[in-house]
Length: 162
Image (cartoon, rainbow, N blue to C red):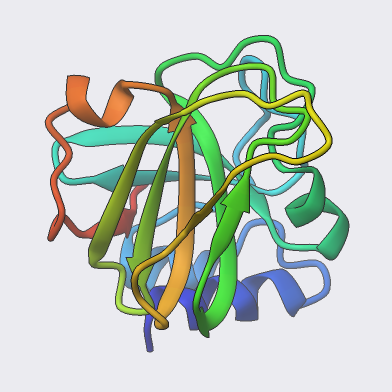
């Protein structure tokens, strides 16, 4: 079972805020307390190569559409993880106030592409940042420049951590 299936099953199961069987199986913990500037109820701790991040899970259509819009600050160790069935991904920075790195992963959690320092956009027509792959299962948004600072590289694995 891949990371997408585990997160999807977790998010659809009623009352599974602390999924002990999954945590025991994979050494992960979902539903961690809100930390810092994070706003969504569902959170996880993820590792990408050498770096770890506390992330909001963008699971609902509303959460995915809003993303990190209107945030004035994002700590270096936080972000948002978007979960989707494998497909092409295309993001934009409309109403986003801070630069972000966009990390595109396949369904197995392998980093396929890094879009560094996507710039905020307050105009009507904002540039888009499409994935080069049609098999993107996860998109991680982190503070702009953080992928380079943390030496994150294409090929690094995405993993949930305890």
